[in-house]
Image 1 (spheres, one colour):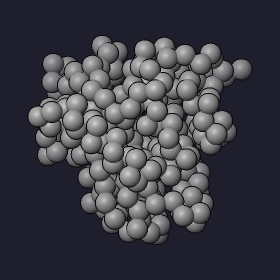
Image 2 (cartoon, helix red, strand yellow; image 1 turned 180 degrees about the vertical axis):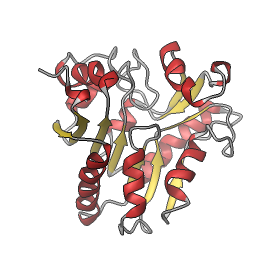
Image 3 (cartoon, rainbow, N blue to C red; image 1 turned 90 degrees about the vertical axis):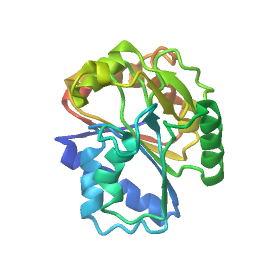
Image 4 (cartoon, rainbow, N blue to C red; image 1 turned 45 degrees about the vertical axis):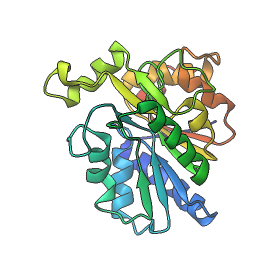
Length: 234
């Protein structure tokens, strides 16, 4: 696990762009993408860059259950606004949170991941150590699945909604095994509120109670942090 400390998200985005350029030069064809505040600066930098993604497909980590693609709080909408409408790509895929049969939608998504593979996966991390929507207690062998969101995750995401009652309580998420199948991973974390999760991810025991700790087992992970997020690292 490689730790890179940066001054801010903009510097972190530039570091990630350099990694992306190297992976594309090596032949990467599929990116795993994340939503949330942590990768926003990376997407802005990617849109502003001259990096050609026309032969690159993307596969997103997760999507809320029950929200339409047009809902401003859906992850389809987030990706459209932050990347897809600005940068031409070969294809992009997200879980179908409106599927009538969510279990089938999860299995279909796993098949999609198997077909394409993921060359470079972008991640954030939740305050409770979740990656994707894999909450504490999620088995490391899990693949795409329906997640019942924890109260802490609902609380954290409520800032994006008018009312806490509007926050979905379920999501479709890549599983931990799905994430670990990526050849390379970049994880962004900024702010003191992420420091505890980062310290546990990097230096704590390997445990399903801190899902991101599984990244200790991955051969190619780059963690991009600001100083506040590193404050509890020894």
